[in-house]
Image (cartoon, rainbow, N blue to C red; front, side, top):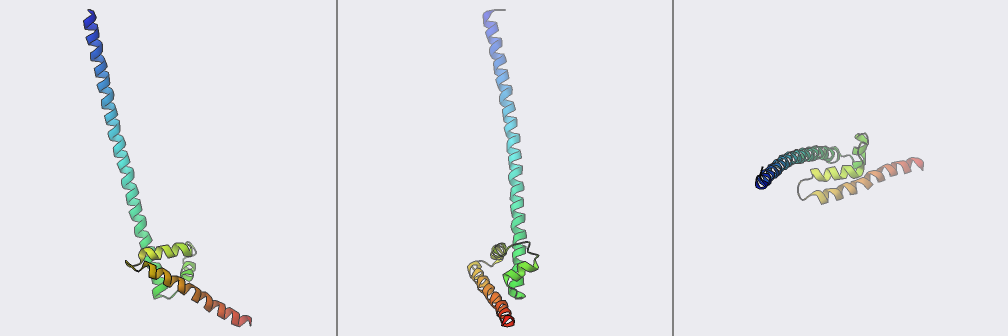
Length: 128
């Protein structure tokens, strides 16, 4: 074999190997992109499900406080204390009609001391 033929064969082999590696990298990148997309879709679906269920919980808390007249701490007690008053406040705000979240938060805070004062008054009366 001539020196030129050996060089041509070596170049051809090197190009074939480079092409093979490039193709493998491209296939891997496509797999990685597909998997990353699956992760992002699943996370998006999870976030949407969480948002929907939190809104339902907030709607129920709003009904407990606004329709049934419970204080927020009483509503939390009725829920088996699976949430805190702070979490219940956040959930109620999620369920609030647009623009009324601030006012509702204030109303819930105002109602809370009234309920405590009512209980404290009854307790103070029985203690006296």
